[in-house]
Length: 251
Image (cartoon, rainbow, N blue to C red):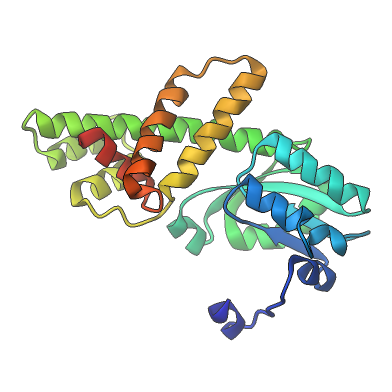
């Protein structure tokens, strides 16, 4: 927290301490397990939660986890909003994220100045769980697209084509978009600087598959993509950028 304190933030010892000192508390951690630990763990959020305090869960979680947290927060008299984030590290640094929110509408309105600082747009999607589902839907599309890009670039290399030529063609085609071009450049350079950790994409694909199971919705492409990302993670690329999925496709 050193850099934040230097910039003017106040450092406290526990989640409970933060809630006690704040009107609205924002949480953004690694996964559903960590999100629940902040709320239900020793010296956790619930210890100091009460009316009219607000709690905003920005961790990428499944709808069931979000509902569990919402029930606990509201049972203590607090207000709850899930606010899932769409965007990369660079977009976060530039305040250009997309925020997908659901839950307490009045808390959503109260958070607008914060959301405007973090992102370029925020959407209110209704009941708790809807934002979590929307986030997983978007990441299913992103994950399967990146797995396809990695396979295509690997095939091009194996076929003796220049990957930079592939990217130039893509840039002029209907497939051109920032995600394709940025990840394509990372694949060509072979550096994979972390913008969105590969392990987080694999986690979201896994959560999407669990949602598909609950709804009896077949997700064959997401299932295959999950296995590809899982293998890349096992190879030691979990903390690298999602573009490192290319290593699994290439080798």
